[in-house]
Image (cartoon, rainbow, N blue to C red; front, side, top):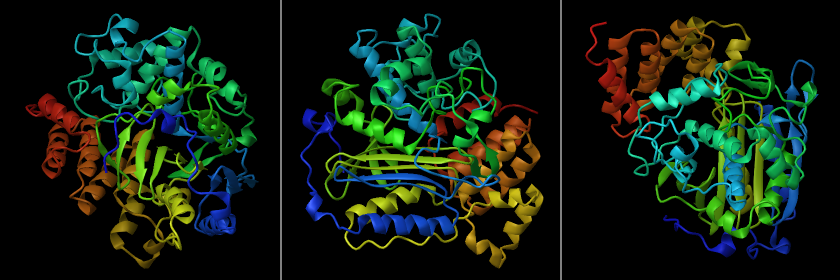
Length: 489
């Protein structure tokens, strides 16, 4: 299903005529959604959910616990890490600066970074915003210490994945560069500018990195692969996360604050109609996402729904938390889910609520076999015991999600904790269970090379390319083959 490059200004002003009227809405919609979410709590769902239908807020409620040790319940004002949903704020900040004639989205990196190497000098802000710049995705781990100068140098030294503008490939690094541009153009820190230009005008008082001065008891503890902790208690600089995360993720917020953001975008208090026409404009580089044909705008995915609706959406995730923010333009509706538990079912919750809202007589799917194997870490199981339990394939596995994504998250849990031997064992198991998924071999290869096992790492990357020569990280895999393929180590 093709999405036009330039949506009509009426559509993109977020003020269309509503097609589903209040009198047509089932009176039991709230009960249906609430019953479904309460059921999910029995299967370990935990978070805060806000749902708008036909312009009316029908659910704003917390589910489960924000802090299991202290028995704090989640509520609509619980603070969560919204992760990659942060990107929409970075995109809005760039457009706000353009409105104030401080920059243009057609500006190149050379304007803001005179030392940018020749191969990257002509990359535009538009290309960074739409993930079509060809930059690497990540420079390092979210919480690895790094200065802005060191981060920039890593970008300077990196190789492009493709010619800028020719393809789409998700790149967190591009949004960190955009955060630096925001600082250069505004004369303020990234967070200070967001507070001044976006959050305060929208009435959002519980959104940011450190400026809201969050109380510890208000911030949800993450529970995914093990007890992950609070996001703002991770290694951060004094003014927020390191540059691995700044601009592309890490903003903390609440469902009620995100609802205020939704309301602000329906009017012109922050972005004008023309600015929003760019903000939600779909780039002509299609991608396949969550079983829908999508394109990417400025920090948003643009999707077409089967019931003649346009969905403006973004998700975020880390090993312990998940966020999903979706605005349904034609029907003046929204689903905002901020969760402090990440498992294999997380991404489906919004889809099930969406179907309850828009698909007649929809019966939500049961949440079977989606508990995170991170629970075994909480029980003190070692990587060896977890692997042996999975290989034994006993009846106790029936309630757990053991797919390639879950094993990948477990592997990177060990990577982040500097347990490369355990990580390699998990990644090897993932390649054995899922040999036809390129990313399993990619993760294994990356970790082998990090462990100094270059020949084995190259073989794993080659296997990933054999499985799918065009998978998302294919260009980087070829780069690793060129770099290490001839080594005798």
